[in-house]
Image 1 (cartoon, rainbow, N blue to C red):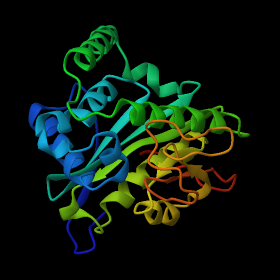
Image 2: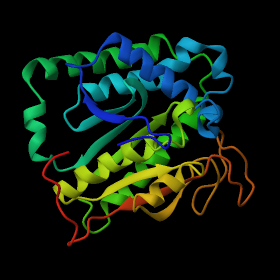
Image 3: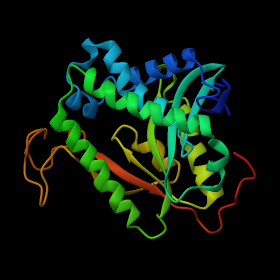
Length: 261
């Protein structure tokens, strides 16, 4: 695998066991700069760039939990040895067979302790610019989307893309496509579908990977049965601020199953 200009792209699945402080810091940097202009983040955490440490913690806390979770695969893309982006794919629904091999008693203990740490940190050290009503609306929107996906035929188990972040210096070089392809390959191997919520800017890479649009993901504007409430961006019909697209990929019976990922 190479970038558009011929540099080598390699992928690595990272867990708590093979990660490092340096890599964790690099991934935090990537997420911060990749989503610097993201409308959803800006609405939920206005003026967040004034608090760099808190800004980095928005994704870092979730990523730390994912590194301990056997149902989550944190995949890092390197370009000539430099971490250029990462994605987290998470199994939703019934467990996959390989998950038991990815877990052990010490990790289970760490996972429980980290959960306590997350709750304490959120309570004692909340983000100074967080807008809780908007955060709650986005959380509710994701929960509604998950319920809709579970109701689809064949979606009792599926792979969900929690996050895809690529350093802007490496964007449009094929890094994002490789991280998406990793998830599709894993889903194909396990004969399960994939799902994600795409921004307007990121939709093209998913379409190229075989995803199709399912519907709109919008937690910030009123809709049928959901009137305007505090936390919404506006009450204008058709406003596209922070509106995402729910996309799915489904395995085809004739798709070949790769021997390894």
